[in-house]
Image 1: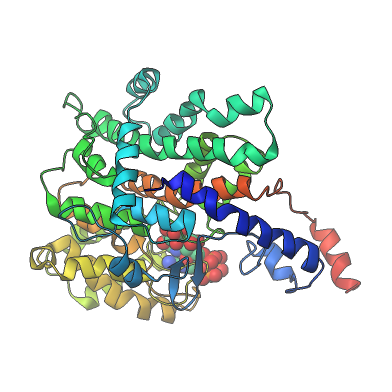
Image 2: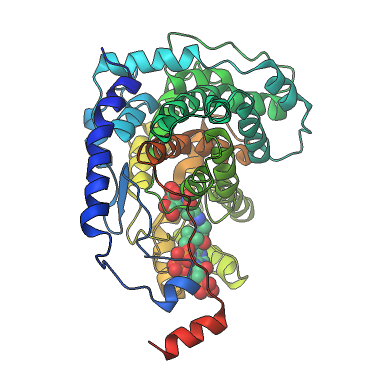
Length: 438
Ligand code: NMX
Ligand code: MLT
C-alpha cells in the first residue's frame, strides 16, 4: 500500500502542470470586478485565493473535492467498530483528492499514533502555564513551540531547492497533526482535571479515538463517535475563512507549518469565528438560567430580541458566505436525532428550539444576510451533555480539526510554489480618487 506521501508525490505533477498552463495561457484573463464594497466590506465575495481541497457554495454548503457531507459519510472509512468519518480518511481526501482504502486509512492512523508523543520541553512548557490562561492561547503557544523540531526550517537553513519544499513541509504537517491530540488533551487535563493521569497514545487507535481517550472520555463510544464526526466536519471550509486564510498567509512567507498553524489558531480564537462555539454555550446557559426548564418558543423569541437590542450578535447564527442552514449543523443535529437519549437532554433541546425560532427573529431584525444557524450553534451542546462541560475548551477541539485543511494547503502551496501573499492596500482618499476616475 502506498503511503499518503507517496500518493501525494504521484498527484502533484498533474496539478503543477495545470497551474503552469493557467499561468501561461490565462494570466491576464479578467474574471470579475473589484468593487468599493469588497475593500471596505472585509473582502466578502472577492475571488482572490487559490484553494483546492474544498469549495463553499452559499446555498448548498461545503464540498470536499466535490463530495458533500452525506457523500463523505457514505464513502470515507470509519474507525473499526465505528460509523462516523474519521480525521485520517478526511485528510487523505483533502490532500490527494482521492477516497482512501481502509488499508490506507489504517496505515495513516498508525503513522499518526507513532508520531504523536510530545517533546518533553513542550510538556513542561504547557505545565508551566497559568491555569487561568485561555485554552486557545495555550494551544497556540504549544503549536508554535513544536517548531523547535521543524524539518522545513532546518532544511531551509541548510539550503534546499524550491522543488523540495513540499516534502519537508509535509513532514512537519504530519508531525503537527499527530501531536495535536496530546497537546490539546494535556491542556484540558492541566486546566480542568489537574492531577489526573494522562494516558499514553494507544498505537492501535485512530487520531480522534486517542484524543477522546486522552481527554478522559474514551469509555464513551458515543462521545468518541461524536468527536470523530465533529473533527472531520470542521476540517476544511475553503480558503477564505479567517483561520485557513491566516495559515496560508503566514505560510506564504515560508514560515514553517507549526508557526503558520499557530497563527491560524489565534484567528480561530475570535468570537466571530471559532470562539463562537464557546459563546453559544455561554449564551444558551445564560438563557436557561434566566428562563428555567421547559422554555417555550415565545420565551426564546423574547430572549433573542433582548440579546439583539443590547447590541450583541446572536452567536452561532449568520455567515460570511452561507445563505442557508449550515450542512455541518444539520449533520450534527442528525447525530443527535439518531440517539433518543440525546434528544432528552435539556441543553440539546434548547439549542434545537432556538434554531427553530432564531431565523425568524433575525429576519425580522433585518440586518444579517443569513439568519440561519452555522455549525457553532450546535457543536457544543453534545459535548456538554456527555460531560465535557468546560465550554472555554470547545474552540480547542475546532483547533485540532482545522489543522486538516490548513496542513493540506500548506503542503500544496509549497508543492505549487505559490508566492508570498501581498495584496495592495488603498487609503480612503485613494479610493475616492479611483471612484472619480472610474
Ligand atoms: N446576530 C446579530 N447580528 C448579526 C448576526 C447575528 N448572528 N450576523 C450578522 N449580523 C449583523 C452584522 O453584525 C452586521 O451588522 P452591522 O451592519 O451593524 O455591522 C450585519 O448583520 C450584516 O452582517 P452580514 O453581512 O450578514 O455578516 P458578515 O459576513 O459581516 O459576518 C458573521 C458573518 C459570522 C461574523 C456574523 O454573522 C456573526 O457575527 N455571527 C455571530 C457569530 C458567529 O456565529 N460566528 C461563527 C461563524 C462560523 N465560524 O465558525 O467561524
Ligand atoms: C469556518 O468553518 O471556517 C466558518 O464557517 C467560517 C467561514 O467559513 O467563513
